Amino acid sequence: MKRYILLPLLVSSYFLMAKPLKIDEILTQQNNFRLDTTLAYSNIQTATNLSAIQTFQTKNGDVVNLPVYLGENKTNTDYLNYDFTLRYGVSKDIEVFASTNAYNSNTKNDIFGKFKSQSNKGFNALSLGFTYQIKAENDTPALLIGASSKIYEKTKINDKNHSNKFKNFRIFATSFYTVDPVVFLLNTSYSFNRKKDLGAFKRVDADILTISPQVYFAVNPYSSINWGIKYTHFGKTKANNKTIGNSGSNLSFLIGLSYELSSKLFVSLNAEFLNSHQVSQNTFSMTLSYKF
Image (cartoon, rainbow, N blue to C red; front, top):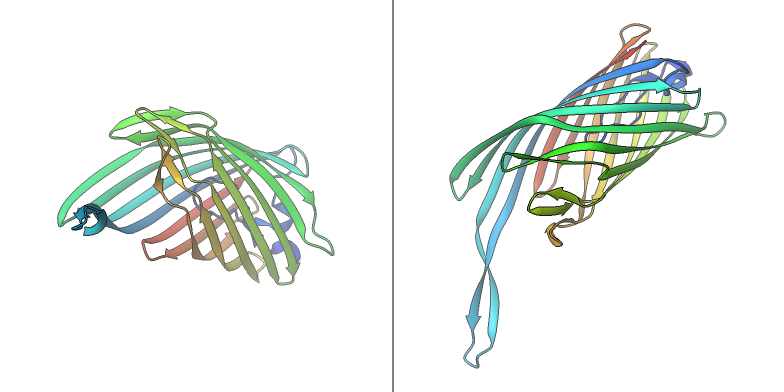
């Protein structure tokens, strides 16, 4: 039954999107192509306290800065991401891939009871990368590593597009071990960024570390279900050498279903749920993977 377990391999840049493959086909077969098409929807809700500094002078002349609560800024964003990834098997242990994605977003803001809506859409990024299997699974877990880079990306600020090249890099590793009919899988990823030119702004996005243990269970020779968690730690975001986003971490929960429609076509449905004291984000994705 081992060869029928369905597994994902994380190689895309923004969401946790599963790649539904059999264990012995995690990498694209040598001299073959594979096309992954993913549609992902996220609803993101944030609540940020707004404050200001009010000065107070004591009788002896000392000045005290007092934080004053002004209210709460609430946002609700509906986000659609379209991702297309083409993979090629260079050898039995090496796969290269190219990924491009586009998006639609609609954000509603509630600031002091005043409502404002903003919509964006367009091309996001083009990435290149590779995956290398260091060790196949035997008596000990399998191990794969890889790296990717956004060779070209666009960022929209105030209705103006800014383009950058080679400003984001990511390294990742995947390890799994099978105890029929269960597969234990661990995904790790680290993304780091260089300074982006955004017109009047020079921004450095936060570095992000993710660690995701998951369990896959073979329901039958054609389908599997999976569940797990994802821990994310992010650093500071800076603009013009000033911190505009502090570092922190969060924990999200994952569930999914994979099904083999035919020997060449797979489908995977996945969901991720994140709820923290400031952010609520629920993501649903569907991936179609076609071998040719």
